[in-house]
Image 1 (cartoon, rainbow, N blue to C red):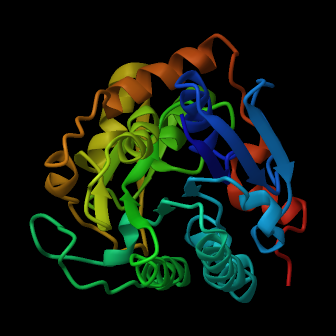
Image 2 (tube, rainbow, N blue to C red):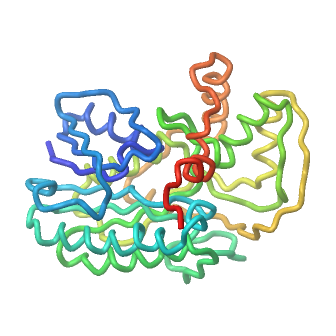
Length: 317
């Protein structure tokens, strides 16, 4: 079993991924600044250190064989709170962290959580990894830049830059600022869904499958370093709203949108490595709805990234 370092392990995806790693009997070190709290349960093979990426040191990396780098300032609105701070976290500190990993001598695999949004607006029917990156926001640009730095270390260890679609589903560290989750929450609380635009097509991935992607790269040796899309259902925003509407029997209000992003992600390259998704957007809708209706999940400011960061002065200029 491996010793694995997960940065951002207390986050939305990390809080689902880390228990999977522990159930597979790995030793896991989570480093997270815990902006949104820590919802991981104690475990004899789990160590959680509260610190930022820039403060990771050689002792933290001693004996670490696999790194899953999930920590970042996530999504467009969050980055816009303070773009300079976000560039420092997402690019500069990632660069410094990679160099520490190289000097450790023990790291064999490095996985980086990039974003499917690095492609920008695409007219191609399917967006594959070989298409040009034309990021249209500061967040997208930080991800593209960090990818390039990560891949420059491919001679030192295996590097896998994962480009996730929009993640959906239940996590101990919930998010209600991603489209599927947000629509379910709106339907439950407001008996109405508000759609901005609606024609935009977005790729999606269930959070359990997202965690499984990292486990897949962990368990399979000999895969080629590079970028990999991770998205399996290309659905228009309006069609997602209609799926939620069918579950809750509520109305849909349509408003104009200034977000032009519309693209279909093709994950054939990932599938060809042997990965198969197990869950769907429909599963995510049902699971979130069930948790809300049973009060196992409640709306909370910390489940809305920008709202929470602003209230806590995180990254404030």
